[in-house]
Length: 105
Image (cartoon, rainbow, N blue to C red; front, side, top):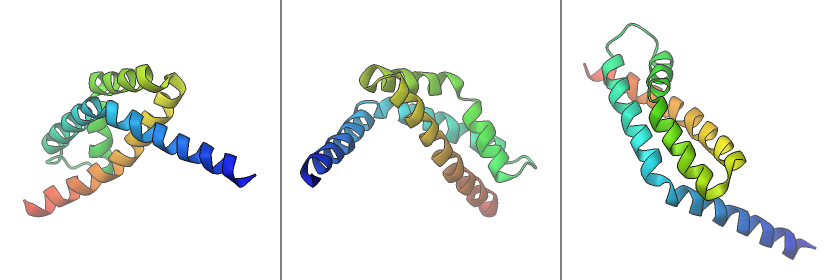
């Protein structure tokens, strides 16, 4: 009973890890765009969370390329979920970076 469930979980985790590795260049390009944009926006008076969200939203083409790469490897449904999760997680991380940038200057 537990062995088939364990095997399914292992396959799912390894599948997700493989999908992330194959589309890593597109994700990195998207993050680099967001980083550069956040650096420019960090000097504004907006909150760090707003700045990070605007930076990510301004990199629409890079996000689409990351989604396409993921979709080709793992399917559209998985790509939707994965890109949404990466976007939410990176918005928070980028907000922290913006706060750190502001503290340094």
